[in-house]
Length: 260
Image 1 (cartoon, one colour):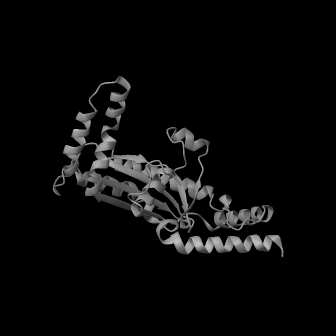
Image 2 (cartoon, helix red, strand yellow):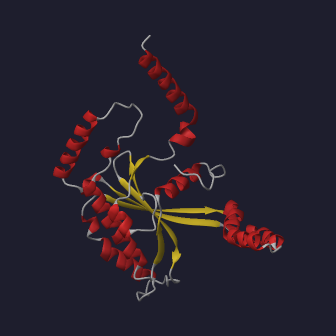
């Protein structure tokens, strides 16, 4: 029997077994396919990032996610208040900033909210973790005081999170750019060894789309920050994004240091 045929048969069996046994709870929890690596300009513009912040979906869209940590100041939500620090002022600023970007189709934004009363204890433990490390380093015997604080506050704390997901699709680029990219992918595919389950990184690397995606990220970030009068945002790397996505389906079994 041909050894390659035997290997492919075994591989198909394992792939089918894994798909039907764990796909519904693990493999198919998101449609992300790969990441767009950091280049020199990315490192200059965002030197604090050590990992890529753009993911590519199975439809070829680019995805980035901001964590909304809060606001720089408490906003006046009254509809008749339009001055600085009001919600109406932030909405007006966003409308003016993003009108140009939304003249053509291709960009999408989505707010994702999480509220979990059962995760209050874990939230407090994360907050007091620096205190516990300081006590351990200095040798001060106050661990029981910190533990009592966790026990007392846990029933009254609810874990709340907000994320802003931003997509940029292939509709943003011209037909000539798309044709040139498809031709480049075809030429590269002819030169690489065949691999049935390996990724094709060049298939997703589209510089024209990346430029437009990054420009939209900057516009949204500036509009929401509103000259330090709006929201507090933090751009997540894809390790954090993947961990949060998996945690939505495997909430109590996803390790804190897990990354795709």
